[in-house]
Amino acid sequence: MQRVAIVLFNLGGPDSLEAVPQFLRNLFADPVILGLPQPFRSLLGRYIAWKRIPFAKENYALIGGASPLLAQTREQGAALEARLAQRRGDVEFRSFIAMRYWHPMAPETAAAVKAWNPDRVILLPLYPQYSLTTTGSSLTDWRSAAKKAGISCPQTAMCCYPSHPGWVGAVAAEVEKALAGISDPSAWRVVFSAHGLPQAVVDKGDPYPAHVEATVAAVVETLHRPDLDYVISYQSKVGPQTWIGPDTEAVIHEAGHEGKSLVVVPIAFVSEHSETLVELDIDYRKQADAAGVPEYLRLPTVQCDPLFVGALADLVETTLALPDAPGGWTTTGEGCGAACACQPAKCALAG
Image (cartoon, rainbow, N blue to C red; front, side):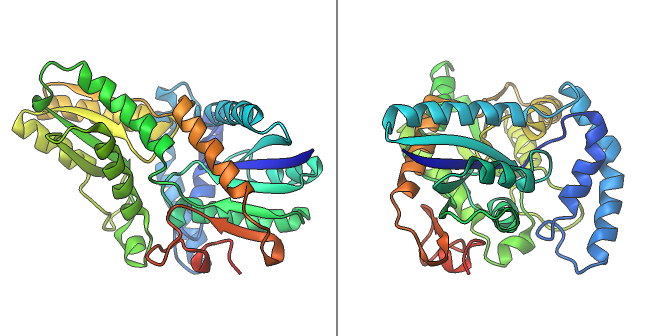
């Protein structure tokens, strides 16, 4: 029986308040987060991390002192294994987790994958939309760790799936359920909120905003509500640099001015973490109340929704069907085309 390791990528989060400082140092040491030459990147990264420690600790204290991301990712991995076992009795699948900025990180995960001795490795980011700062960074990190661990079997990366019907269907089902319970949907605006990105990153060709727009367009089409009032916005801006917009805070204040109630949909997150549990649920809800928004409803992330787990299983089977590439590395994805900045020629796994 063929043995296939599935490596699930995600950001990671501190597992205690004591872990917050090192988590932040790991985050701001990433060259795709701070694109400065050394030693300036290290010096500035440590300073930014130091400045943010009190704020970050306060946020994590509000949600129990730790991020729930790892536990939810383990549940997603178990659900994916179960779904694949139903579909493919000829393959033994095992899921592994590689977080980017907190444990388990790529080196320890690569060692575990090597010890399991799979026939093939499938790299599956839990980021539906590609960005160099998320999937790209994780793939670069993994490639280095896998090489050091001595993994020599074929490895295939699914770089993006912004419009996959299962992912889109899971989000659309939550939106439809919320709207169906509202007596007057015309009094409400749906806010699809994604994590922000510095404009300078997008100017260099990052496809993330286009992928977010593709996801939202597919969700709206699935809803079949031609009069739907909706907007795409971006949250979690950090620092003085220009970020892509519109900003979720600005969208909330505009809705308050217009007397619109809000359905807020996390559109780039598949699990709960500080950006949803603190920023959307606490900080933005307070802003909505202050701005005069009549009602504020935040929808949950997809987590282990059967449609989303089915989508992940589809992606695994798609990558499993690909032929091995010279050098043992292949990459594929819904956005891998001539107009996409994450096409194989530019992917972190290429070359």
